[in-house]
Image 1 (spheres, rainbow, N blue to C red):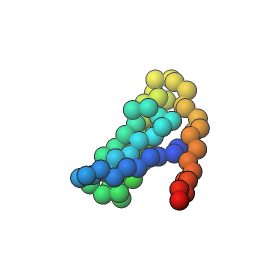
Image 2: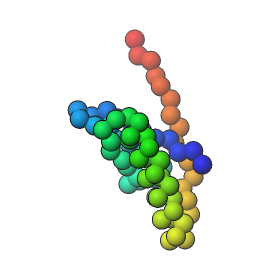
Image 3: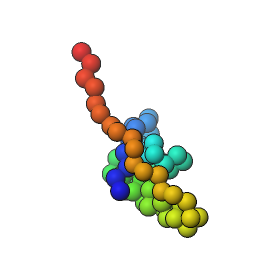
Image 4: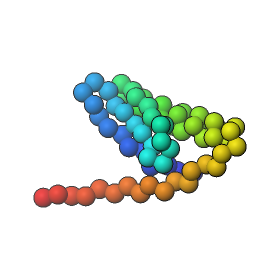
Length: 69
């Protein structure tokens, strides 16, 4: 499954969240680090849902960019 991930740059670090998996977040010093950590967080999040016998949320969020003049 492919989930949309939002990566934001903060003053001292990067943050990542997964809109379709509430509470699934990661923080890292670099973009590369936060991308690795959010992959791990998604895998752990889905594993926990499976262990609890819950339905995995379908990836539903769509991402686009908008140019503003």
